Structure formats: structure tokens, C-alpha cells
View 1 (cartoon, rainbow, N blue to C red):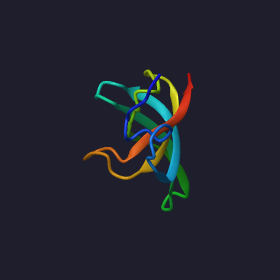
View 2: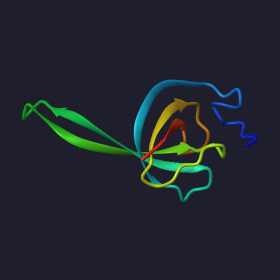
View 3: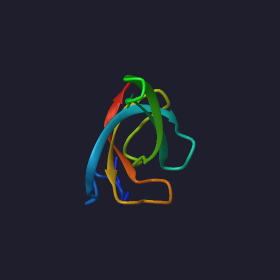
Length: 95
């Protein structure tokens, strides 16, 4: 498949830098975008315990990648693509 997306980290010269996270796709409704839910633990010093937290990140989905809800994907930080998107899907397609 020919990918002519200028924000594709694989086929275009689009640089990714910074953090890389793994999460589960919870929505594919926005155009060329996926919502990825990332779970992590946060330390609470007052109680000397950890709590589970989650973050929902909007990431750009290049048209050359086929991803659906429930898939585990790897996302990488990049420059701002839109008001809410500063991450791009770089891999992962397993359930």
C-alpha cells in the first residue's frame, strides 16, 4: 500500500523524539486518529502506597497501519500535529 501521509514515521521523513508508550486503543472514531489508554502507577507519599492511574492520549494514525479498538499499540512523542495530537502510532497490531 502506498502511504503518502506526511506525518507517517515509517514512510515519510517525520521525526519522533521523546517518550515511547504502550497502550490499548479505545476509540478509532476521529479521522486519522486513535485514542490510546495508557495505565501506570503513581506513588502517594502521604500514605506510602501506589495508586493505579490511566491516561487517554490522542495519537495520529497513518493510513498504512490497520488498527482497531482493543489492539495493543506503541506510540511515540512527536511535534504537535494538531491542538490535541502530539503522539503518533509507530507500531503494534497484536490484540
